[in-house]
Image (cartoon, rainbow, N blue to C red; front, side, top):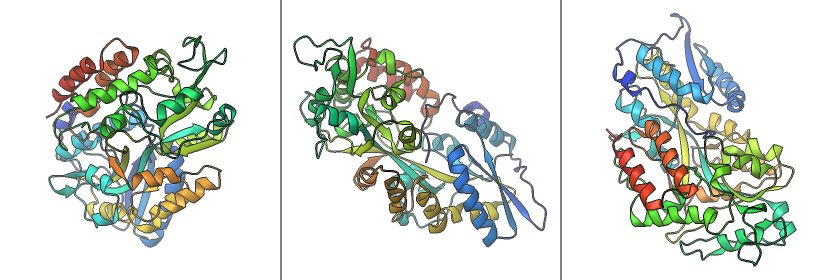
Length: 432
């Protein structure tokens, strides 16, 4: 599943508009076809080498070359290759990039039994009634927490964390008990010094996937009015939710200041690994980068319930087929194979991903259980209310501006209402 780092490069939309009718430069003679499969995750590459070996054994007339590119280079190269007509035969696709590629004719429609896959993933890659990617996997936002800090503070994780805009609920109450300054004082106590906090109870910061988008959805707000539609997160419920996220930092002082956490230079993940933050919302894809490097026992809890219940971001990937592949039949065969039980179980059992194919999550759970991390809460959340990242054209170009505006909001330099109004206006100007 994807690592979800901030995307640092906007799609070359103008270049995509210049797509030619050239075929892919893929290889393979008449006797044996060679397909190129592109991904960005070096950890998952090890799992896919086993998957492709199994595919090649079952399909002796097809060889698969796995091409690994760093995430930041992946999209720039894919756009350039699509323009040149030399894109890989099968490649990973994300919900936020999907609209740009599908509307430019880069992706081929696929045929699978959609009822067998997580419906949020299916919906993320559906355009005008057709599916344009075989559902691959999903990652979901949950709450990582430092069990050692809880024990030291004599605090137990509540059975259910809750929040409301007025500060009521078990989340803020728990975060206060876990936030302590150098003199041992907690927020709300006489003498508490917000400038000299030793450990923070919670990490609230400007990260859309794991933070404010979940507050918005759990408060009854809406990110977009419909797939391929307009941004709407400046409605009253959304603004109220944004205010809550900012208040955790600037009013309640249970989260680090934005000067330490704002992207692109924020150090919040390092702070959690260093034992300075007790509760840390994160996608399960972060586990391989956090759990092995932490000197404390990592716990997992479900995200807090808001006034509208619990709504959590579920971010899936798809196996996309290049519409102009030189080997369309073989490329489609590979993509469809990757959506079947054998390869998806291999990736789940190896602890790489939660598979998009229903009924296979236990292998991923068992892998992490053996490493003393109970990821069951992630799986339980996926059965509840989930939502994808905004699926509409222009998001990849809008993202940098969105982060700039919301950085100011978390710093307290813009009100949530002003920030949301500005961001929605900027975002909707990029929607085509």
